[in-house]
Image 1 (cartoon, rainbow, N blue to C red):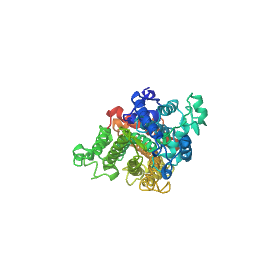
Image 2: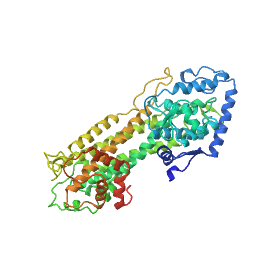
Image 3: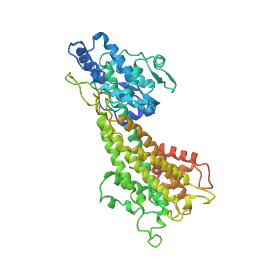
Image 4: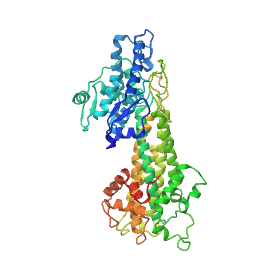
Length: 516
């Protein structure tokens, strides 16, 4: 029920949990008294500048390369409408609802800091949209990540004006004006500076970063479990995961992953069956087994770095110009998305590498030269049955795609606005491809879990560890035990759901207690 509790939005930073609850679970929001006081104070200063004969960027001038033109007071309302309408220029497929809701919440937070000069009524209207579950249609293409996510945010601002297209709380597509009327929300007539305040932020890329961090944090735990299942079913050793060995290379993530794998493999009858030198003559396991904590640990440490950057961004007020505490209104470059773009790209790299190692472990199960006594392709009757041969093809295809998605977007830049905006971050593009990578990693780990579970069953009468047995049992609720070939795609999707919903980790933790 907590997911639906109101999220209070004030000048202080939001938490990751706040963003997840609003974006993914539909929690309503409300502005705090402190936020409304800060917004009002900043607005008073903007009104003073709007009345001054001295030009002030974004208040009494045009925008970007057109900033040299002083705008007559009679045209300033039209200026704001024109800004939003012209910048709402996205194209392509709709962006996911959770992304748009995250974007809206994060823009609301910047407004709540009192550094944008927006009017309280406009901020309240944005909060009302979020709480009513009205989601503006935002498109895949349009943001260069500088000056922030202009086009995506402009589609939101357009909705505040009662224009454009939205999805209501039931997901129905309809004109924004009609949706606002049904929700008893009055559209706003934007005043001086408000157009810029609504669109000049990095909120889309930050929202996608926070969602990705949340998902990858869960997936790296799943990767520890799936790797442990593979080590066990491939008759590997767990001695390489000893804490004294990890201490020789004190990366924090590595130690956590190794400890997780040790917990998951505890009391394994399969491991015990080949512990003495007479029953196992192999000196070392392949890298994909032996080095699993080193790779998954580095993934963890990269996620931790990304979370630090996201935390700094959650404490930020991104707008241009910005209203300072002493009343000055100053132009700045805080809207540049480089800090977020870099870590979005870093996460795509580590997701691809974690998936690559998982695929290599799956491949070992299918090769009689490397799987230590299991049937070819884990087939019921090799030759008649193909077993998991093509499941690995699917996994390999996803990994190959993820490697392409790991090519960084942030090293690209394309000039815009008549060379006024001559270096851009491409952070939105980095975020969009990372979402595909997170989905890909989910599917790759699911195939490994599916394959490792089949191999563990085929090791009978040897007994797996209680924790890995619990994972196999959870999978078997929707995927039958090994047998002749069946329609495999639905079984893969069942495994994908189990991974995505946290079922693999939950099953293991029912035995081990909390995994790191």
